[in-house]
Image (tube, rainbow, N blue to C red; front, side, top):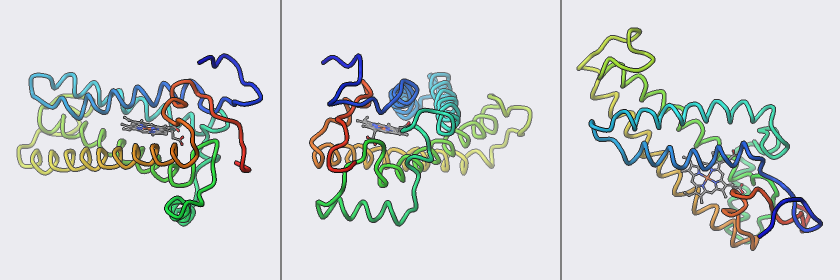
Length: 197
Ligand code: HEM
């Protein structure tokens, strides 16, 4: 599988920032999700900081990055995303080179939930352990610890639920358009537009 250059059949869609962002995010998310024991809290919190840093970079890249990385190239109205979902169910979904309208809605939801989850983690870390960047700004409180932990857990589980739907969407999109979207997220290339994509 050689992907050194674009050719008449393939076009570079995902730049290195998007690809490194994606797979680092996957590793960081599952690390933080799985490792929650007190003995390894340092690993959990560092995975969380990494997620936050990745989000900041990706959001900036969404404004200044390459064509398909830009929010302006894929963010659309919710009605458009719903229409696309319906088109997928009824087998009429057209192919997009970048993110399709349903994928776009999922990406926004994932970015927002990940941001809320990491931020709630930082607040919890200060309230519960008196540690982290907000320690000294927020007082430690036993009363607040439990509800905050609950919020942090619910957000993480919601994110996991979205990740599951996201991977199902990637799988369905790959089948519908007979292309391997997962592999494209590694090497960055996709089959050139046919069907007016
Ligand atoms: C583990 C299995 C996963 C697979 C196979 C997978 C696959 C993909 C693929 C193929 C795309 C591009 C979709 C397209 O063609 O429009 C994508 C985008 C994306 N995925 Fe995943 N993903 C996985 C897990 C995750 C996880 C765990 C997260 C977040 C915690 C995530 C967040 C995202 C985001 C934010 C994008 C948009 C990328 C960008 O534009 O920068 N994914 N994923």
